[in-house]
Length: 179
Image (tube, rainbow, N blue to C red; front, side, top):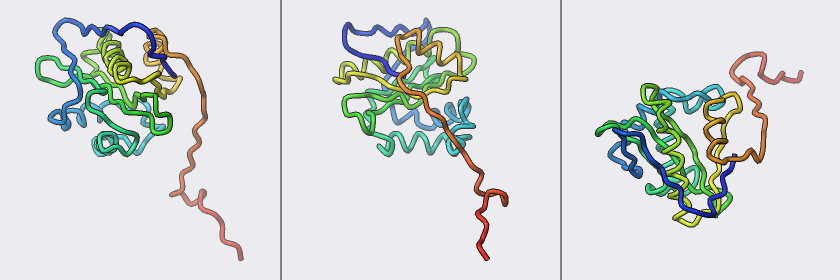
């Protein structure tokens, strides 16, 4: 899905009792714990499941492995001093004028308050201010709450793709040797 960023500034308003800040490395361990809970799409990306997977995802993002990372483009949601939501974003690795929302997560007790909306809008506005023309993301169509959120913000579906997996560890998946 993609959002065109041209036009007026986006105004993210966190719900009362929350504040939004750009990514801070001091919250990295909290972010790992938060992302480890997420994984709605863990079946699609099992390598990012659990705490070790969340650490791989986060370290890959901030190290630039998935695209150029700038702390000011990712947004954290805090309740007091506690991290309760995260919009993890980077510059698209192939499309130089496009941002990419790698992951969005809000802890369950803090959902349905508008925090996810505020996180996406803050990230979109940060990219707009940085000169990006568009903000893209990937989402599984079965993740209906996320799809509805993105559509309500003006994101449009641009491409659909299938993902195929094969268990290479099972004996039935191993190639047969020729005699």
